[in-house]
Amino acid sequence: MNTQPLLDIRDLGVEFDTADGTVQAVTGVSLKVMAGECVAIVGESGSGKSQLFLACLGLLAANGRAVGSARLVGEELVGRTERELCALRGTRVAMVFQDPMSTLTPHLRIGRQLTELLTDRGLLGAAEARQRAVAALHSVGIPDPESRLDQYPHELSGGQRQRVAIAMALIAGPELLIADEPTTALDVTVQAQVLGVLHAAREKGLAIVMITHDLGVVAGIADRVAVMYAGRIVETADAAELFEAPAHPYTAALLASVPRLSGSQPERLVNIEGQPPRPYEKVPGCPFAPRCPSARDLCRATEPALHDGGNRSVACHAPLPQGWVR
Amino acid sequence: MSSGGRGLLADAWRRLRRNRAAIAALATLGALVVASLVGPVLSQYSIDQVDWSLATLASPPSLGNGHWFGTDSNGRDLFVRVWAGTQVSLLVALLATAVSLVIGVAWGATAGYLGGRVDDWMMRFVDVLYALPYMFFVIILTVVFGRSLFLIFLAIGAVGWLTMARIVRGQALSLRHQPFVDAAITLGLPTHRIIARHIVPNVVGTVIVYATLTVPQVILFESFLSFLGLGVQEPLTSLGRLVAEGAIEMESAPWQLLVPSAVLATILLCLNFLGDGLRDALDPRQR
Image (cartoon, rainbow over all chains, first blue to last red; front, side, top):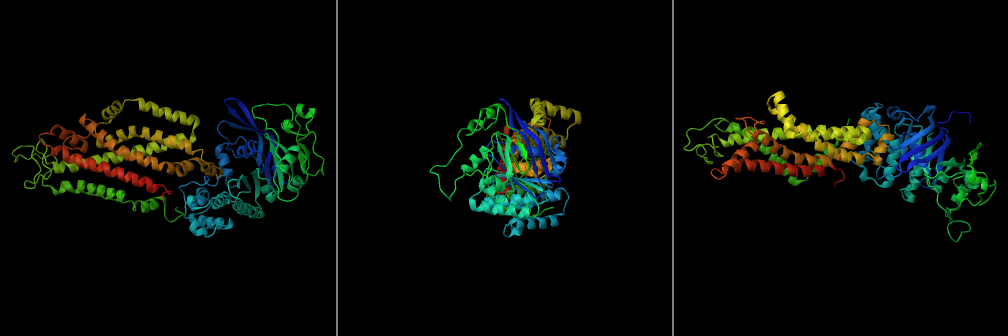
């Protein structure tokens, strides 16, 4: 780890001012994404995984606030003006959203949307931009890209639209792509196509942050996984290691709740008892303690810090022993 | 600039041509415009010429004496006056609507998209103008700048944009939380471009419909101003004025009311059909 990370998030918090007081959506998250790496952010709904990266891009809602630091190739993102962030978006970092049905502007032709950034920044002339758009659609596996450019978004299927959205995000050659549940709204065969597109982009050196709650997607594409719970990162590890031997009880419980087809099948799907803490409540101790099978008094009293162990970090007073088998 | 060969407008035109009612309305409007330009030239009379040769000053339509639409109570040829009035009414309506459209859409879209304090201030400004009495505003304008046709465009447009701004702002407020706006932001597009390219075209349907409703209002408001002596001045006239004058003589000389009313009604009907057709044509999700 001697090279500079592409994205270096340090102690980042996200707060929202609401009528019920300040809600802490993300608390003290630190994460590094190296160039060309694919990091998956896993967590259930409301764990703050999306807000973390929306904060990095300056896209929080009006009542949201980011504190801490997030650096993109050494450039601080937190607290920058809209204009400064605008210059970074699209060319250095881009984002793909969950619902492909609504991420394309309905009244603009595909070609116009794809080339808008290029022509607006004066990066390319109209003709070159169109050629670039054809190449971009080709690279995400859209057949007959020439004629697709003249179509409107509603003339494309959901999977095609998501691939167009990816092509659009990548058209100005960003180094980092943040994909916020890019496959959640798609059916399984189409998911595979979209993941294939992201795979191909990775092979050309793109770094990807994949926000998801689908562990199958994680297993398919990620180098490294960060598991989030209640606005904190509770465990990070190489993807293979994490699946092989989770150290945090929450990770273990999450993996155990995935239905599997092979091996001995439990009679019922395992679920995690209880609910995640409400973000308004400030509970002492580990946020997972009330649901944790191995919680002790220490867990309920003091919150464990994320113990940095090189390839694997875990925030737990009683991590599961390595070699522990599900 | 165009990356798709055909632009949004060319595309809309292609769809508009398939709408029979809209095309018929467009053709009728075109015919009326041509008639209003050519009509006064065809007649042997001029707009302020009193025909003393008539038995009564107000004479009914007749092919024989050349007063095809009859004459008004002062013995002036109605054919010439109706077409001259049509010119004025169409001009006032189109320019005033265009003025209110441009200001209203730009103002409303900016306020709605930016939101927050900017939105508050921009819309409070609109509220203040709303509270100002309409007539008071127009009277001040005429006193300060003197009477002219352009002043009427300006005055009507300057007041008409308020409602347009409110409508567009409401639409922009809901549009700015659409995922495609977030996508455009993460793409790195500057704010003014997002407003112009991703917000404004989305409100076109509403705006067009409202604009077609505004045109009749403007025509009627202009006749009201003229009635008060603040609008078009004699011998120049407008459709609204002719209708108002005709209404007085409704029982003795019905043609004075019927002819300008028929032209006015035709214009308004055509604009409504055209507005309907345009709204459908500008929405790419239609067919």
